[in-house]
Amino acid sequence: MDYLESAEERMQKTLDNLNDEFVTIRAGRANPGVLNRVTVDYYGVPTPIQQMANVSVPEARILLIQPWDRSTIKNIERAIQASDIGINPNNDGSVIRLVFPELTEERRKDLTKDVRKKGEAAKVAVRNIRRDTVDSIKKAQKAGEITEDDQKADEEKIQKLTDKFVEKVDKAVEAKTKEIMTV
Image 1 (cartoon, rainbow, N blue to C red):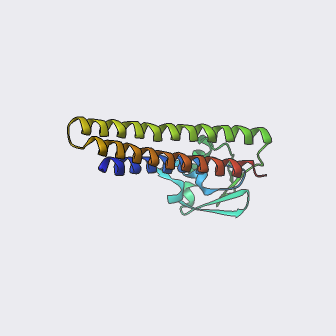
Image 2: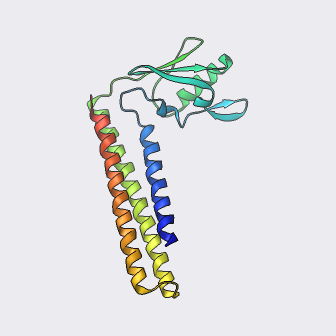
Image 3: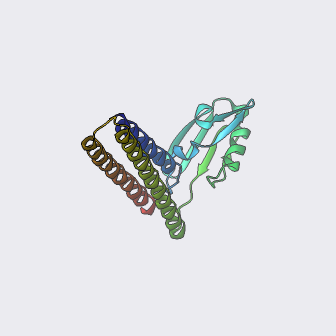
């Protein structure tokens, strides 16, 4: 029975990872999550921006970064420019502003394709977890650890679990697509 718990845990991690990836996809609105993967060289240590500065959203399309140590502002600016978020930072000496441009229709469609690809990859990962778990169940049955009836019951449970997580992935993809396409 611990295969099912292990499988559910792994499937949840897959879903959490997908949601983390979705946070970094910008949908035309300012979202501090786009900076989650940006790290700054701070005295030789790669440090997340959120640990070095206050990140706020004063307006719908502006992200404001106020470093606690003003001497790091150039490093933060360089890290943002080197990242893949595609926005040029405006530095006025004490704060950095990131102005998110309106997304074009074409860019929105590209982003939704990317979202669907990530969703499909997450569903494949969930199905791979199901396959591995079913293999473990079959091995346990062959080894005589569980009965054939238990094997069938466990396989049905893992299938239901898989269906539940595939549905959650679909809902996450649908929500993110809707967010991107909303003008």
